[in-house]
Image (cartoon, rainbow, N blue to C red; front, side):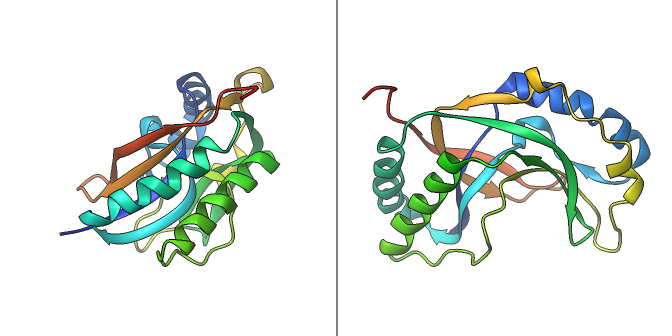
Length: 187
């Protein structure tokens, strides 16, 4: 059996709730989009793709080592709402050197372990909606965007997730395969 795996971090529930509320007008303008529920929002650090179930132990070692070597860090949503190819609607994040370094370390560890990763440039974002096969995200959606207040857009990232993507009738579902804490402050 094959599965699609990826390494990610997730926003805290309070940040997800603030972003969800801020997307209200966008959802009203484009109810035909497949809106991703907040509990599925994540920032992909490394997309591994289809692997055999036996590969999880190997993944756990590499991903866990890199997580343990990283300190918790702050992330913040920025004020951008954009699209990839007119079909994926995303909320952006402020530039974060610790996030970029963690993603690079995880990708290097997985590549060194023999996993062939997706060859896309790292662009941290939260996918919030997708258009259907023959549709596009209306430009009006990004124009009605009003980002949550600054005080509700930041969180401390303190764990790395290994997630399994499972296809479903209402879009992908994500199951946690493993969770690794980032090293404690001052450790």
